[in-house]
Length: 286
Image 1 (cartoon, one colour):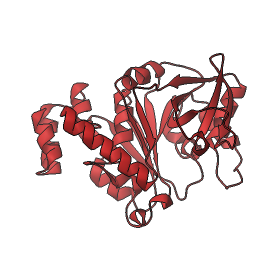
Image 2 (tube, rainbow, N blue to C red):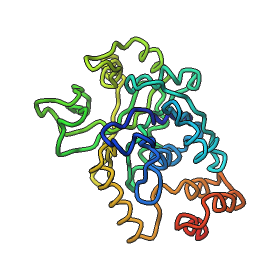
Image 3 (tube, rainbow, N blue to C red):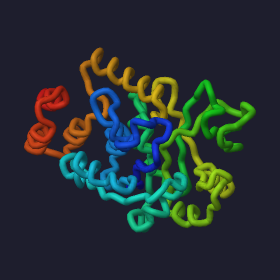
Image 4 (tube, rainbow, N blue to C red):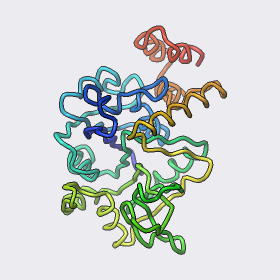
């Protein structure tokens, strides 16, 4: 069972420049909450309480001032600095001492997931013991993503940003791996762009016939919020859902309270921490 998770929140965020010249991309707002709340909420919904947050040099204190050690959400957050982005699989090299002998989940810090069926799919996937599991979502522009070609309920091929349309099933930024991932990540060689590629890592599992997949489905939303248009679209979506339904997406305290990871006393402390704002008003209503 997977009990540990990594959020990769490093990178330069050049597609969002000049916004990211002074602020980490994951601290920018998606409607009324910082972007980092959204991937963190996904891990919490999956019952993962031990989390490693990988961030840029010089920005670790900003994350700590917001999230602390995770105690106020009933979880444990530790931090690791990524000196410069060298590709997604580097998370398992940097996080080797955190992972130790356990299986691990990885979610990208700029990814947004939402859907009623998502929680059950996450909880179900936690129990796989061996191999890797990826989450697929049908997209209209597969050339912008890594994609998986599925044949007879098996992954036939994985291609990064295909020039020819071999599949419209994009590989989302959420992955579950067994403990062998640290060993496999060390064997990877940088691609032409000078980074370790997640598709190369997944192909090792595919070669060993140990790569599984899960469709997110039509009722769920997934977006990479790495560009300003994507951030705006996601922000508008969150605003619309929250106003119409009267709920909050990625409310960390609500998840923690529902799972009995925190008490009402902790909730009141968090309200004081946030101050007089709409988010605090929502917490009061809980």
